[in-house]
Image (cartoon, rainbow, N blue to C red; front, side, top):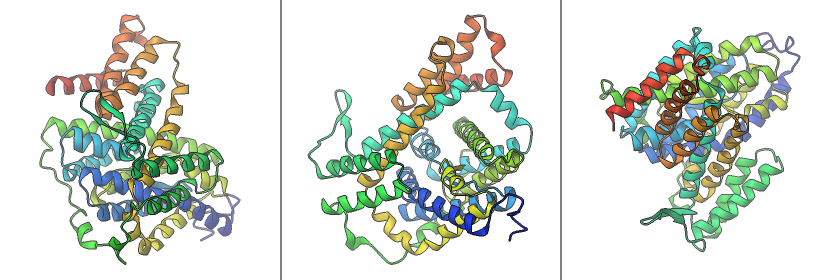
Length: 425
């Protein structure tokens, strides 16, 4: 094991790697409940979503361990799951089976990009202002979804949305859990999101929001059998399918390039970047087969690295702990929205920090970014919000006689978004 993972060369030990993998597991295990809840909104049964999330994380971490030998933790990504459920399946009208086909094809495109120079070409072509705007816009979108799930924001026939009834048990449980989530995160308590969910379950039980009688000792594997390999290519010849595929590919490529680059630099292993990106791309493809939204190199990897993780043994440890946790998974489906929505809200706040990297003094940079940030939540569509920003960017630059700042791939992307609007106006 020492030789396989090059422990001595990377100045680490088995004990350090096992500890780092354990810390990473407890910081990221919350994703099982949260991702399954979001997948359920697309129509995937909650129990099947739980298993799909776990298996996607296991395969992703193992790929990262043995292909790249890096401590990067790979799980279904926040923001990407929102794109899958609320944009691809709800707004664009694809079934979850067709959505899984989109994930699969996006994974193929991601693999092509990661194994060629396209990753660098695309990354260099997209302005940083638009990349950061996408992150911030998805952050507001997740916050809006969290506020809806928690009952803090409700539908209104006159104003579209309004404040919910704050005295309702469900809303009170959400707000108390949100307060605890914010405090735990502000104090940088290890495993803060996991502790937040536990606290949220206790509060929800106090308000009588959980039916413990509905619990069972094992998961229904029969439900998962209907999700595993259930992807449908029925609409692969329709432009809506390829619009969804194009948008999902862009998001997972941008997000993973940034995260993996940051993680490999943190451990001074820049030479591992390409293999890590390739492992992540293969992992994203398998998600379409397993029944989940795509995986990403999670930000919680920083917890593993800060705990001493330097090799793939850390990622392998996290994968093994996901497998060991299977007997406890039946109880995850009992976790109410009041315990999950605060995490969406806090994650949204964290993603909003990307706005500080946008040059707000340059209108040709800030206005397209603003359109993305505003229109992703207001149109309830990540794709449509992105489209407005990507179309506005070259128009503004050309009008200001700054066309040299635009790379050819960006013109192509903007044109594809414009064609989509024309065909679906």
